Image (tube, rainbow, N blue to C red; front, side, top):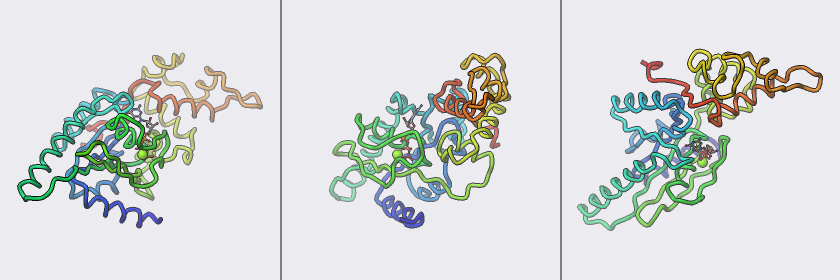
Length: 273
Ligand SMILES: Nc1nc2c(ncn2[C@@H]2O[C@H](COP(=O)(O)OP(=O)(O)OP(=O)(O)O)[C@@H](O)[C@H]2O)c(=O)[nH]1
Ligand SMILES: [Mg+2]
């Protein structure tokens, strides 16, 4: 199915949806709100979920919640791995369900389940949120983009159905800084980027914004090591006896992805004002 057909199919499905949960990554809530998703949900009731809040700097996430509130948007920080923050999502689903029931009753129409949808760019945790809400693994998930291949209805209980959707990433992304962040959060396939370049950019970002991260969490001897120092400290050697920078790069990137460098946000509201 072509990209255009996929979007047309989603757009058609969205017509019957009452509310959309737009899932962004709490580490970069601005950059991880895709323009395709925005366009598709422009006329829908929507609520913003800042998922993976466990990996983001809590103070920055708080600032993001205030930033979105100033723009009239309700943003809910969530940690779908541990189920934190999902009560607020459940409450809003139930509130929407009651509002729908009242509306249908007022029009003399038969009651029907509330239809919600989770949408967002790839790998933000849409399926994980659904599974958590459901209390079981109904939707496939995994730590790379493109796990959910097509839209899939999941019935939470009699009164609520939720549509899981594949991650949508606008093609031809050009902005270098955005690509750097999207590769780090694995919304864009990190394999298609130069891992050494990516990890060096991360190290340089850390040196400015979180200078203690490597000392504290990886027990590195230097606060701002070059990739070669990482390889030396970890004893990553290639076959010819040189330091294995590729392995050091993958190590730094995967440590970041797993939260092993601490809770690190990639952008703050002040960057966009
Ligand atoms: N640390 C952390 N990891 C999470 C959280 N939510 C999901 N993950 C992990 O993120 C990865 C992606 O989760 P999915 O639920 O498959 O994401 P998705 O948005 O459905 O991805 P696509 O269907 O590929 O677009 C998995 O490895 C999850 O375990 C979270 O709140 N915190
Ligand atoms: Mg999915």
